[in-house]
Length: 264
Ligand SMILES: [Zn+2]
Image 1: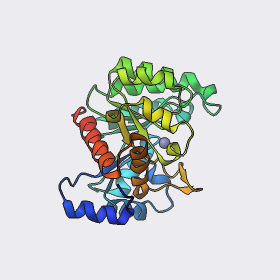
Image 2: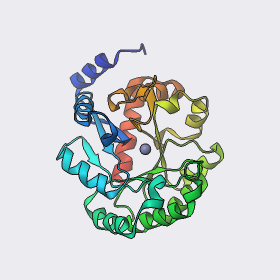
Image 3: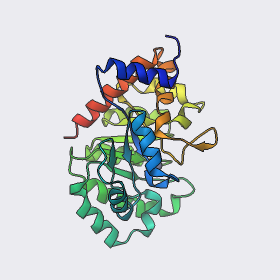
Image 4: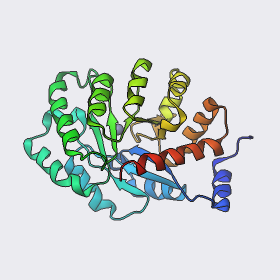
């Protein structure tokens, strides 16, 4: 299929109106954008839904208050692994109290990179608390695993929770374990530019792929990536899958629906 411009494609999609389903950005740090409200408006106009991840219960509460009710945004309750060492028992108690009122949980996980290795034990304590509190099947999780892929996949497998490995950079050898644990992988623009991208996408069955921005931390050409650019990830996936944008979008929307229906 000839490559069409984003705008043209959106018009086609709106015109067809067969499925009004939106592509879902499963991991976006909404509060970290310079102008979150403008960013969300642009995403809404582009037909993108967003999971707004947070790093601690206070950020979750602030963001919910600030954003109010918006149909295309879900605020996720998080405990970021790189903040684990500074979480007090009070922070964890606040997390417990808020779990029943959130749909999504994230960003949570483990990070054994240079930035996180010294707090590995504290991170494991926090992550284990999260996995115990997240009643099985109720909440989708978006999970950070940098340098800690084996421990994260093992824990998620034991917990049996519906979860997405966000920005996976671990060994290809662990992908099968993740698939067996029922996990999904969310792909962002930075990943599509990596040398490892085709190999990773070939290792993951199409029905386990979802989208994310990880904006504004992930960059597109040196500037923070925005959710309204998500279609370019669908296009990069289409190239590896040997198909077109329309087909890859259909696959991704089906995956979103299947993943979410497994969590009700
Ligand atoms: Zn993130």
